[in-house]
Amino acid sequence: MKRRGATRFGRLATWVVVALILAFILSPLVAVVIDSFNSVAYNVFPPIGFSLKWYGEAIFSSRFAGPILNSLLIALAATALSIAVGLPVALALVRNNFRGKSLLNVFFLAPLIFPTFIFGLGSLIYFFELRIFGSFESVLVAHLIIVSPYVVRVLSSSLVGFDRSLEDAASSLGANKLSVFSRITIPVIMPGIVAASLFSFIISFDEVGATIFLLRPGGFQTLPVAMFNYVTIYNDPSIAAISVLLMLLAVVVVVIIGRFTKTSFLGKMV
Image (cartoon, rainbow, N blue to C red; front, side, top):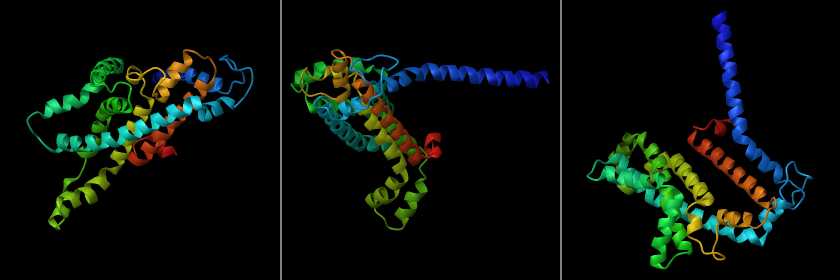
């Protein structure tokens, strides 16, 4: 009886600790969500009144419309290029043993090791020397470097569990390598491709640490950089509204990944 009582007490204590940790982590997000419905033109908590006007400001204001479009274009381009680069690299790393494989693996891990602001500072110097600093192309290249490691890791995980006998069976029936790759390999690893694409998109769309070094003041801007510059001047809840929309976007991405990969409990719940 004492052991059962001690076990129950231990479980209860564990749940209490977990609940406190979650409350500590989520409380700032809850505050942002509540502040986004504030009716006054300055941040105050608790809100004085209820209003949806800041969501309209976030979505339809010309101040953020351009940066939103820029972020979408860069994220989509970075996603497409990272899949085009990451899939051959993942195939090479998983299916082949060659000289320099470890070096190639480390090369694609390097962007995960260095802080993004250090990478951004180095990119600023490099792109300034190339005279493309502050351009769409410079930001796109930086984002491609940042998201590629995630794409390579996700695709490699999909390829590790791939049943090669499916490809062998197709080859034995007369299919050429291109047909085997397009009709067998790609469909089987499609959940990994979708997951890698979504990870790449959301990481690129939210990237600010390196991007802020690569943009000229008053010129081409992405949404996270525009938000950063905005809060240095203004103090209204429109940034809170944008943050809530970005959180919802992240939740949608997690749900989609869960549905495609069948590994996320959130995806199974919905």
